[in-house]
Amino acid sequence: MANKDIGQLELVASLIFILAPVFIVVYIFIYNNRKKRHILEKQQMQLTFESELIKTQMEIREQTMQTIGADLHDNIGQLLSLTSLTLNSVKLEDAGKAQQKIDAALDLTMRSIKEMRLLGKLLQGEQLIGLGLSEAIRHEINWIEKSGQYAINYDVEGEQPAQNNPDKDLILFRILQEVFNNIIKHSKAKEISIKLAYSELGVRLQVIDNGEGFDVTNLPDDQKGMGLLNIQKRAEIVGGRFFIQSQPGEGTCIDIFIPYP
Amino acid sequence: MPVIHFQDFITGNTIIETSCFIASMLCLAWDKNIIWRVFPIYLLAMCFTELYGIFLRKSHHNNQWPYNFLILFDAIFINLVFAKLFKYHFKSSRLALVGFAALLIVYLLEVQNHGFALIFNTRNDLLNNITNNVMSVIFTLYALIYFYMLLKDERYINLKYSADFWWVAGVLFFYFGSVIIKLFRGLSHSELPYQIITVLIWIIYSCWIYSFICRRWLTKILDS
Image (tube, rainbow over all chains, first blue to last red; front, side, top):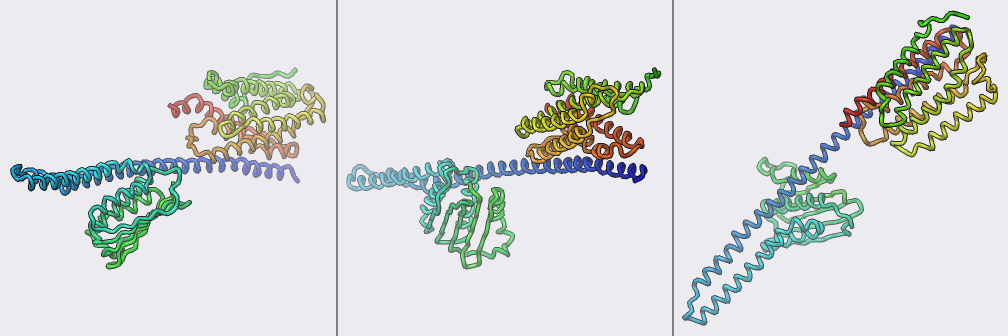
């Protein structure tokens, strides 16, 4: 091979061997920029998650306060007013009737104390989540059952993982509260069936009611704020999925699956 | 005795090598890490070798033997720097040791083949070809391993101001880029290999100068 050919070959090969590291360095820069974007997105997602968690805590607290306010006004307030009226009407001259009224006032007081105890338990609801989701759900159900308007069936399947995730428990508990709100406000249901199932993949919460139901695909504008979007958003924020099945006159089935813990 | 002028020592290689040495003095002389602190000494040795090589060439002596001597210094120092860089990602001492042992074995085999004249005889015209080639392969591999670790690392590093990154980039450009020149050594009788090597020397030392600046100032700005 002539000296000139060797020189040309040497030049071309050297250029290729110099350009290869250029491509490697450029690729590393591009990949590194993607890594930066990914880290920023992750941080943003974490911030969104944390703000959603705080919002959820606030909503649970607000709902608890509303329930307590309503109960104080409708139940305990009435019972105590009635106790006061009964005691005011006691005439000591008529010992027989007075005894009856005092017994009635005592009964009313005992009922008030019972109501107060239930309220106390409701106030501890947030802390109950720390003991486990199924326990918190049971307390929520007890409270709804107290109204006597609903027959509630509650099943827990599978073992709750030894290491729970309080953030996910909180979000799932708030989703259930939203579902209960919808049932109470809109469904006119009499029977509610709740199933909480733990598996290796995650936790599934299913709520079925026998209420009026609605057309999921054609929801009127005034019913779009029913919290369904909120439920979906919350389920997605913890990597979960949300399904709803409903037809007018056929009740509603809500299914939420969240990877757990 | 031929007359040697001052301007004979001013070449493309000596300009960039001396600049790199000055940059290392200004940026690294007080560095907290001993490896970075040794850089000025390493570059000073490099400059002396280059200048002495020119002196020998101008006085019609063969000038390969100082480079044959310097190659050992190269092997030790660059291995040490890579060992330090790998330490952030995995237990690096074994890899650096294997690399250095391989280079030493090849070097000693070459010394055995050519005798100690390879290093000490000022009239020989032999260069440690195999050691040079093996060194190119090993350092290219080191640089690629470093980049792979960088890609795998979940932490984000701003590479624009990363002293380590630019130092390794320089090594990769030089040792990978010079593979062809080393393989074609002796086949071509033109000036082209020297011109390509000069370009590569400018690339590696420019990367290193920027790396030293990053080490001295930019990395600290980022840390704060």
